[in-house]
Image 1 (cartoon, rainbow, N blue to C red):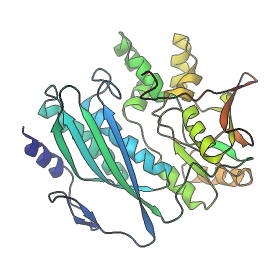
Image 2: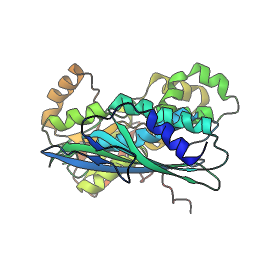
Image 3: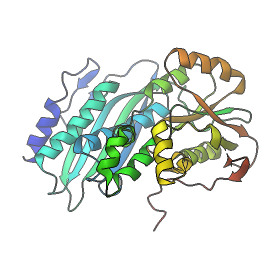
Length: 331
């Protein structure tokens, strides 16, 4: 399959264009009609084979899904709706046409789930590894984006889902006897391969009208907490005993003698939201969230102080070093 046949395959899998697509893929660029009172969100992520994903732990469909999920999650953290994506691939000879079709299939699956459409992109040759770059355009009500910089002392620190599943799943699938463990812990495998961004939660948090700071858990809860702390000029205190962990995470950790808190704090790629909201609004919003199927877990608080993150474990409060995935930390 040549480059243009691959592009035709991608485009033919999408279905009819929605009315707001003024010029679809096929020209030099796509053109979208804009909505009155809305602002455009731009997000971009690049994922590289052997750095972000491994052939031995993920199928091509899973890679496509997860690459798109990372971008959708960025839009969710702003309280926005994910609308259009540009997909660029650098493809090595080791990736055959059928595998690339499967990669695109995974992208289209998650796009359909969240009302997103691939409207263009590019393909080039890579000398060694597959490189996937996705640029996503979303929309949000003008002047109302959720930001990292609005946390205030006294706020409740919350997350919108269980943590550590993706990191535990990766740990499990890197074992030599992984097939035995994968059968016993399918939830961990799914958490790593097919994460679900919390778009609904982001939209709901924005629509509450409360002062909400927000970030997505892509590089680990502690890392994202640091980003909020630094942007807002506050100190965040995480309570390790209150971090929501799936039962499979706890069970697998017990079997192998691992501390599951490290998966939650540093693992990343859970793609839930972490944020803060005023203490006075917490009881009401927690009740309302439950009624509409959104999960909110209180995991700490915001204090005055030097920007940073502390974590309470077994009653002891210690500063949490800024730790999460960093591409250049080992150079």
